[in-house]
Image 1: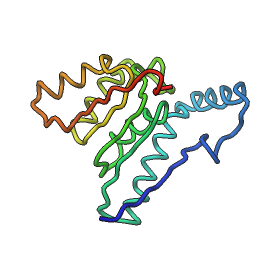
Image 2 (image 1 turned 90 degrees about the vertical axis):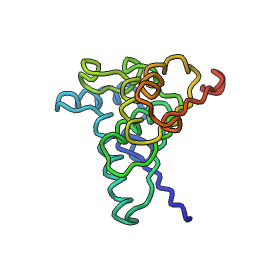
Image 3 (image 1 turned 180 degrees about the horizontal axis):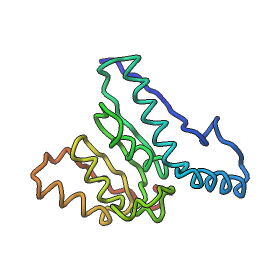
Image 4 (image 1 turned 30 degrees about the vertical axis):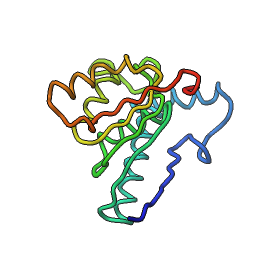
Length: 163
């Protein structure tokens, strides 16, 4: 089986970074909010479009999204919105949206443990974390609904490795 790796740099990251100045980056993030969006929501959109592009180039390919830290939040939400995502691998996912990239009003509905449970409903979720106890909610959902144990894998890492 052949593999295709596609590395995506959503807007504002890597070669598409606007500036290194923290004050200017804050100003840009606020501009998105004035438009009713956030930088994070637009990055999620960019990843969804990248998944569509991969599917266009190679129909039927198994797409696995992976992200670390803030990019893990982006990958998690993109996995909910993009079609044909088989798995999502998340490293150092923040335990709450209060420590994550801005998504307007998301905490009115759910927090990241509930989002992980939503993602596990349709695909395999692998979560590498230094705080495995913070993810008891999605573990309980998987157990109570009788889902396959492979649906959600939580891998405990050392706190020093997480940094």
